[in-house]
Every structure is written in C-alpha cells, then in structure tokens.
Length: 445
Image 1 (cartoon, rainbow, N blue to C red):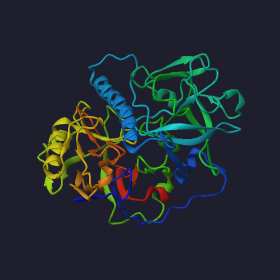
Image 2 (cartoon, helix red, strand yellow):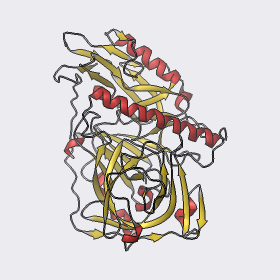
Image 3 (tube, one colour):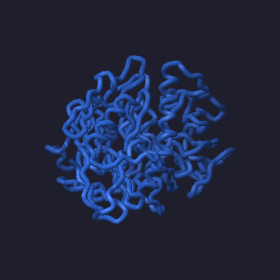
Image 4 (tube, rainbow, N blue to C red):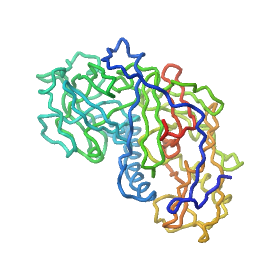
C-alpha cells in the first residue's frame, strides 16, 4: 500500500523518491552547430509549467490543467476520426497546446521568447511581423527584417514537402497548421538560427513564421516547439538520437528539465531502477510516441482487462501514447471502470460523490489527519512493470478534505499523462526505439 500522511498543511501526500544518479554535466563552450554534427549536440533547458508562479492550490492547478487536457483529448480524438476517414476537415488536425514552456532565442541578433513544448505535434512556430491576426504575448513579436540569418524556404524544400497543408506563394512555402477547435497558425515556412543556451546555437532550423494565429491555448507563450516524431519537429531537425525530460510535481514551484542529444543519456543511467519498453509506430499518426500497455494492477490484483483493450488497430485507432502535454492519464472506459471498482474495494475511505473536483473518483479524508493507506498502481508495459509512487496517481488536498485518483476515461486512444510521469526521467531513445523511466528528483538536475 502507498501511504498518505499529514506532514504538509495543504497536501497530504508524501512521496519518497530515490535519486541514484549524479546530475549530468553540459558543455560550456560557445559554438554554432551545423546539422552534420547534430549527433554531437547536447544541451538542457529549463521547463516551467504554464501555471508556474501563480497562486493556486494543488486542486486548482489540477482543475485548470484538466480543462486544457480535455480540450487536448478532443483534438486527439478528432485526429483519429480524420485519419479513419470519418470526419470532414479542411486541413489535417494536430494535437497542439501543452503544459510546459521552454525559453529559447532565434535570429541574429537573438530575440528571446518562451514557447509551449509539445511531444504530440511537429511544427516549430512563433508569431511574426507583419501580423494580420496575433494573440497577445509577453515578449515582442519576432521581426524577420531585423535578423541577418532569416531565410524563406522554397516550395521544393524537404520541410515544405513534409507539411500536410501548404501552398506555393510569391515569397515561398506557405503553411496552414490546424489544432482543432478553430485553433491554427498560418504563415510562411522559413529557416533561422535558434539559440537554446548560452553555449548552443543551431543554424538553419525550419520553422513556421506565423502571421495569422488564432484560437485558445497559445497565449501562455509566443509559439510552439514540436517534439514529435515527424520531420518538422525540433528532435528530427537536430537529428539527435535521444531526448529526455524530467517533470516536477504539478504543485511544485520548482522547474523541470528538457535534455536533448547526449545530455539525455549522460551519466551512468544503467541502473536496476530503470524500466524500458519499446516505442511503437503508427503510420496513420506518425508524430505520436506509442507504447504497448499490456495490463494494469491495483494493489496485488491484476485487473481482468482484455488484451485487445489497449491494442493499436490496423486503422490507426486505439493504442496508448505517452504525452507531456496531457495532465492526467486517460484510459479506455472499460478498463477505467475496472480500475475505479478495484480502488473502491481496496481503499478504506468513504467515497465522495459530490463531483466537486471534476475527477471521476474521490475519497473523503479522515478529519483527524491520521495516516491513510491507498493501493499501489502498476502499469504493465511490454518489458516494464511501472510501479508508480502514490503522488503520481493520488492527489490530496486537506483544504477540501479529499484525495482523488488522477485518471479519467477515454474512448479509443489512451494517454499516459504527465502527472503519472512526474519525478521520473523519461528517456526517448530514437535509435533503439525504446522509452525508459527512471525515478529522479527532477528539481535537482
């Protein structure tokens, strides 16, 4: 059983995570890297949650994130319908949005801005002048005329050909990238020098120079950095063999980390605590990182979930993706019903039926703040049984007297969300096509 204690006034969950690795080092020499030397690239950047520094309780942060997550889930479902040919769309739909921001610079001289990090889409884009429709952003809108390294991409360029919706205009390759619910970015495809740290800058990165950007969810930053598996993403353009992120708790004021290239695997990462599972490809949804989920256990009970429940089907539907931009985990409804039933059976607390949190299953905390036991939760991925710490699936708040399961139901695609990934190094090895989980105190990296 995982233990809940009252050591904190607002949060009753206590989590002990062993950090067995030393923090990786990084290069301090200033240099610009061309793409031929991409496999030598290694850098790390700080990630901040979109609600970082705001005065919200843990439940308020979770509820805000879930609202964004439900919108994202709807977009993902729209993508599946479109891929199956069951929906009429003007242009292909992409995941969009996200929960974490990274700071970067572009241009010569460099202009600094923050952008949403999204493992569920590919295109890198920012707002550009002249802007026919742009949302408010905290930094000046990028002006291509002020950069000596800005260059338009031709319609015959490989990146332009990789766009699903593009046209050839007088100035070069023009794009339209839609994210569902009427959110989109439209503009010209160009290349520019991107600076990620004081020591690392990379020329000729293709990006969307967005002159018409509209919809919800983008105003936390000045654009978006896609980390998906397609050719337009930052990961693909850098040509790195691996990348990783390490996310702190949703209620934590501390920052998270994104590590690219050799930084993702620097240090001695071969430990008994690491769990590794294959990455699966879906030809109809090529941007996503799919995993093979074989089952779920609650406590010592392996749930009677049919093997086909989480299977990736031939028509591209179903399956399980791991996603940094979705907060809680959503699993197929039939499986979630079994999870809820078993938690109710094993958790010795009264169920709260008020629905006040927006989560499907909540329990009332004892008034005397005594220690509470909750069942273990284990995700059985192919080759990796991931036994989650209590804080990665039970969210407690003494101010409302509730503890809730941070999961929900879906129909079709299942998503392994970022609450379940917190305080773990999540390593994407793109050469070996594996994904690894390693317990880590992310704020100490």
